[in-house]
Length: 228
Ligand code: HEM
Image (tube, rainbow, N blue to C red):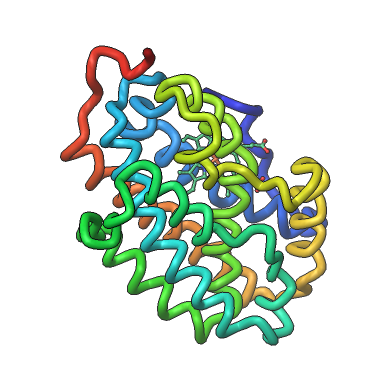
């Protein structure tokens, strides 16, 4: 899926949110056009592949949201504390549904997820780095994630339980939320080096996510069709 034309190159007057998107869009494409992601999007990924992805999300969001709690009072990172974004409760509910009540004994992080989690844990001391990881995951979840939600609902016949990760009822209008989020990015007034650090960390965040997808893709290959 190619949602929009690639963002155009940035100049000095370009809002930071636009610079960030422009600088990371090629990394986004690597994640979006990965084999595992494509199998998910075209409905050929068996349900256990989807379940494995939900489990890997759980480990990553637990680390991301823990770092967010540590930075709640930080003047930069604290601006991105939206309680309705928090995904761990939804992931726990989804894993209970998809794996069962003993899911904690049955899921474990892949090597790439361990690497990603270790990086996320370091962000508790790095407000700009935290914002980069926050942006890469949550803005994706409220953008392309909403498309994935529809595909997953159809492919696996899920209605509520099992895909609550993609449901952000507490945020209200998602287009309005995305505009608010970009306005917060634009209001950061970062020094040039801090802005570059944030962009560099967002590119790393994409690569770490793509490695998680690669780990999953080595184990979970597309079947003929997951659609009922
Ligand atoms: C699974 C396949 C994916 C699809 C179909 C997809 C699709 C999209 C779409 C349609 C947008 C909105 C683009 C726009 O505003 O013009 C978007 C934005 C975004 N996606 Fe994805 N995406 C996918 C995977 C990912 C992954 C794996 C990540 C990161 C881990 C990600 C992170 C983002 C971010 C951060 C944005 C917001 C960009 C911005 O407006 O600044 N996406 N995606």
